[in-house]
Length: 480
Image 1 (cartoon, rainbow, N blue to C red):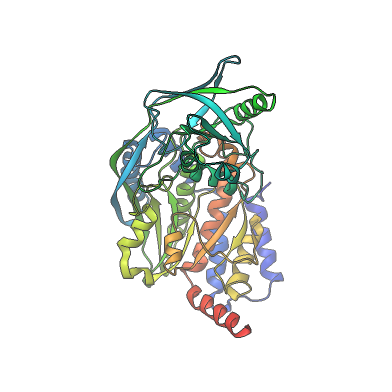
Image 2 (cartoon, one colour):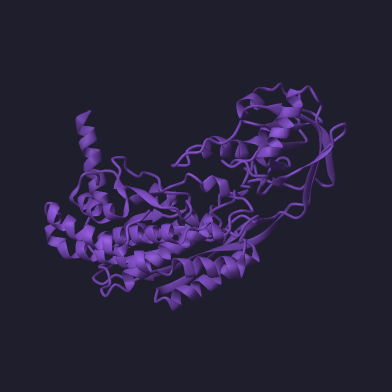
């Protein structure tokens, strides 16, 4: 339960008396951050944006007409909200279309299977029907003798994803999704099946991209809904020979994707840029509300809250809605994050920090700052402003960002993280259940408030995260 606006105001008032002076030269910036926070908790544009996005355009697969149309609309939305320098940065892409798909167990125990083709998986070119061979891990499949799966279907059931607030249970299963088809092909398999990478037990499969190897995805791959994976595993455990029939008309095509970029120009140091990132594309089963319409809504609303606070920040705030975050590609041309980095060239040196919202819309509970900022005067100011809305400061630094701002981090731009509660995120992620009704407006408002307050503190100060990181690295070297 979040604090009411009145309680927030009281909390902020109390903190003002209890806390020791922090960044005294910037006391006005801290007070304004608290005001922006409270106003964003009460009212912001996030729900309007994500409602329009998901209702007007639905699912937005990378490179699809829906993604392209949504991006053009989002650019107009930005302009209407007062963003400056709004532009669309287009780049070539290999798109993927699901087509029609089906799966069933045939033979003595016939029954339908609920499944979804993995993103960028090729079609079956008709029907594939073969015996299923089960493995309990990617390692077990890799250890199978060469040629042992000739004429068969490989199936990895690594068990249910571990539900965690941080979402850390996702990595082991997404690794199977990425590498599984190639591993199965190397053993001679005709197709690949896996338990969906999700934390739910619903009869809804989770899609997601698989990996190109030397420019191709080697064979058709599918994710089974959790109950259907259980059924196949139980039948095999009972000593049954399980034969499965698979059909898919999935195919790739040449297209374009795009980044949508808009600025709130800085008042006195406009060449110092703060990037707030999320992605526009989504998977095709749902409408991309959680992943990642919500992220665009949160970052746009935070920047708008700052812009309408009565004073422009000293530094420029840039919102980027990245294209093509979800899919692997057959070349190293890169996704929207790589394209953005390539496009700014040496301007990357003027990017002082970047953050990404791509984990749904549930509450922010934790702030991770770049290395060297932990315990700093800036960190104390941020803690003072964010604590009243339930956001604690982490002692762990943010090092990598997400898929979209990761290229900036690799190029030397400091990154921050506002960690969201991911306990239910992977119940919905990449499924037909990723729809607008799953967003809790109060929790999304808390996200906007946290982003707006933190970004204001950065944008209207002279904090230098690059220098903090360098000092921390020098201190670490000296300690050795």
